[in-house]
Figure 1 (cartoon, helix red, strand yellow):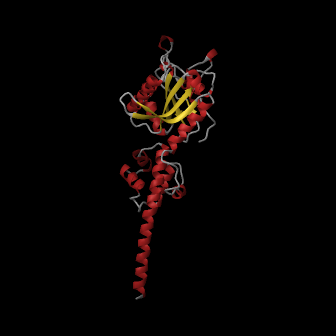
Figure 2 (cartoon, helix red, strand yellow):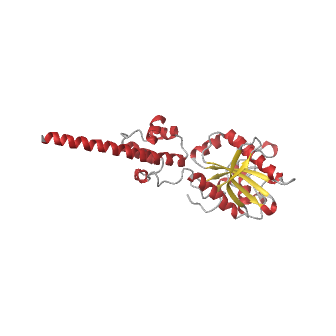
Figure 3 (tube, one colour):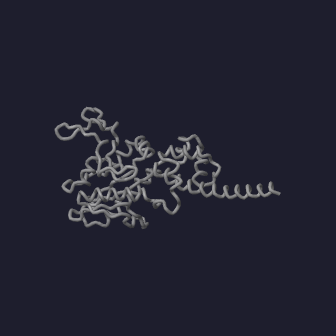
Length: 290
C-alpha cells in the first residue's frame, strides 16, 4: 500500500511537472521570438548558429518543444547575446509592444530631425494613386520653407523591390497634396535597422541601392540635424542602430563610384572642401543609446 501511494504521488508530481514544463516552454518561446526579431535573424539563420534546423527553432518559438534541454536554451540565448535568465523573466503581458523596435526608430528620426527645425509626424495616412489607403512611417516638414520628407523605416528587409515601389507611391501621393510648383520639394528617405542581416543584404546590393538613393548620407544627416542646411536634391538612405537612438550614414556604392579618368573612389577616399577626407562610416546622429 505505501508503495502504491508513493507511485500515485510520483505520478501526480510528474504530471504537474509536465504541465509546468509546457508553460515555461511557451514563455521561453515568446521571449525567443522577440529577441530573434530584435537581433534581425531569421529562424534559419539562428538555427545555423546553434546547430539545429529551422523547423526546430520554429517549435521552440511556438512552445511545442517542452523537452528541449537547458543546454539548448542556453545556446539559443547566447547566440542572441543574452542570458537564459533574461528569457525566463520575460513573461507574456510584461513584454514591450510587438512593434517596439519600429517605434524606437520612428522616435529616433523625429527627435533628431527636430534639431534641424523639422516637425515630424508618425503613421500619417495618405491615399495612393490606386485609391488604397497607406501610412507613411514618418513625415518630416519644414512648413515655412514648404519642404517635406517621406521617411520609410524598415526593421527587416524582405522584399527590397516592393520597398522601393511602396516608397515611390507614397512620395507621389504626397506630391499631389502640395501646392503648384512645390512638388519638387518633396524628398524620400529610407531608414533601415542596422542589423547584421540587413547590413549583409545591403552590402551585397550596394550598387543597386546607391542607384535608387544617390543622396549622400552625410548630407542627409546634416540637413536633418541643422536648420540652416537644405535637404539634398537626391533621395537618401540611412542606418538606424538596432535599438534606436542613433542614425548613421552608410557606404553605398563605394566600389562603383569613379572619378576623373575612371579612377575608382571608395568611401574612404571621398573628400570634402579643401581635400579633407570624409569617412561615411563614422557619421552619426544623436548620442548613442544602444
